[in-house]
Image 1 (tube, rainbow, N blue to C red):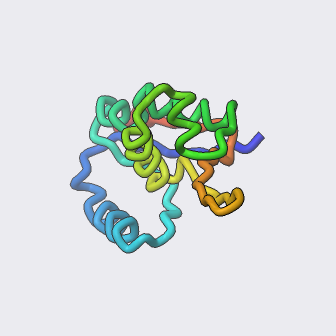
Image 2: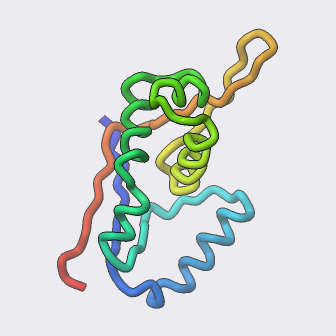
Length: 126
């Protein structure tokens, strides 16, 4: 079982300003984002990142293995564009990967969750 560990650090964002600016630059330039850390001011911000629907998306991808974003949208019973927005967000944070699939003349992006678990650790001393 592969475990993806995401460290969640709860502290004022000002303390991490330089790291945040660098991370946004990497995302904008489409560089690979290797930092396995999410810094949030509070638990409410964490809940905005890992919403129940985004966790559901990860679970459906892992368990049902849809072959395309279209198929995933059907399994979720959600609009494809809304699913795509969530997938792009999750991908930028490293939760989802895509594999390009060819079938006859069509190409599709297959969403992949290449791990079995996300471990979130929250320090109790700030």
